[in-house]
Length: 135
Image (cartoon, rainbow, N blue to C red; front, side):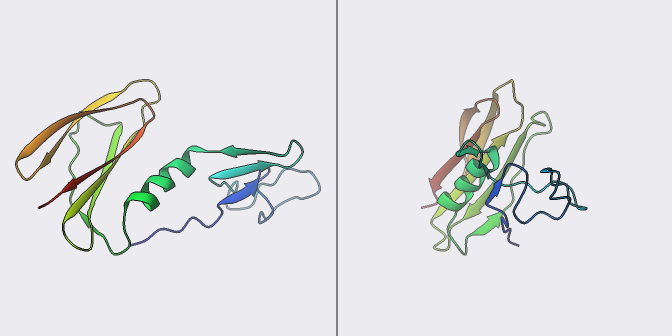
């Protein structure tokens, strides 16, 4: 499986690729509002770097092409924690990407790898990347 971020940069009204009423300055296409990791405020000449930018950065920076996703289990008590893990193409390293969706509370979780355990705390509304050797 793969994922493509089609709109990396849009203006703060969802354009220029938006389908909708352009004369009002508010773009609401039939499929919903267009969103992007980076929004440009053309009037003020500023950029808004959104959360999805940093999430995408973790995946693209730490997960090598041709890595293989492996099973990841998150305890039901940690409903705000999402995680995925991949093994690199050489089979020598594993990368975990962990997201805490709770905007107010940090979360502690445990990582088990080859019989070793580590307790890690992720800040509220945080993302972490952990890498470990399988050798």
